[in-house]
Amino acid sequence: MIYILTWNKDKWPESELQKLMDDFAAGKEVTNRWKCASHKQCNIGDRVFLSRTGQQFPGLIGSGKIISDAYQDDDFEDPSKRAWYVLVRFDYLAKSPSKVVISHQELASKLKVPPRMFTPRSSGTPCTGNHLQLETLWSRLIGNGSMIYPDDVNVSSHPYMEGTIQQVTVNRYERDPSARRRCIELHGASCKACGLNMAHVYGPDLGRDYIHVHHVVPLHAIKESYEIDPEKDLVPLCPNCHSMVHQSDPPLAVDELRSKIMPRYIALFS
Image (cartoon, rainbow, N blue to C red; front, side, top):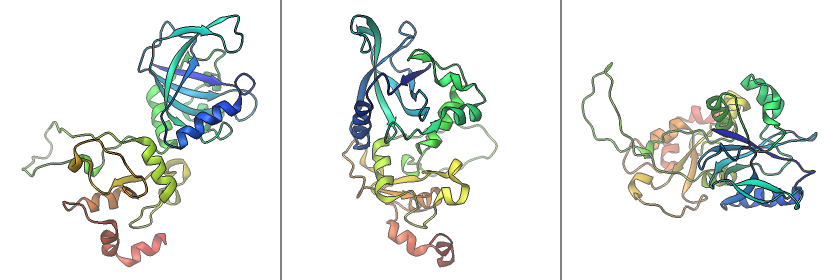
């Protein structure tokens, strides 16, 4: 289930939300309680989207998951009353409350639903639209589309018959989305091998911040969790170049791959 949490600058100080956003941008884990009207329905693991309501900049500004059962506490708006809350761990927050990821009007238009779906009267109201469409659009907007990377796969050679149904098992290694964001902040969203920027080719609606993030040392080779330095350990590569560096084992260095690219191709994006 997906729930819409709301934030209004007239009810909760903008400076407090900005602090959470700054922590998120710095790569910190951000967990905070939020009012939830659907306290009898919501469960740990349910998805939430944070919606800015009010007259100024209405739109979505964050997303996350519920990580606690609902509980009662003093209402922050009126301490003489009690309110229901849940703890939320955010997996995305905009850089500031005024920088919405997408406006309610545009979101409603793309999903073909009424804008009021994202401005419920009470925070923590269920989202009744197409959840898959919302998640797919959101992933594209924040540049965090779910994909299988070349270094997730370690496959031995054997013959295949085309046209038959076959189950394929892939080791999917967990990637820290904050490390990906930091890599793009440091290196940009253009491919470090060929220079391709998806937004310049496919337009901002499809291509903004769409880029693979290459681990200099493949995750399947490490086989354990480790602390990443986004500046040294991660490199933005387009899907083609990312596949090409993994044509050899160990992978080609990015500089080596760049030296193999035909000069006339690089000239297109320089």
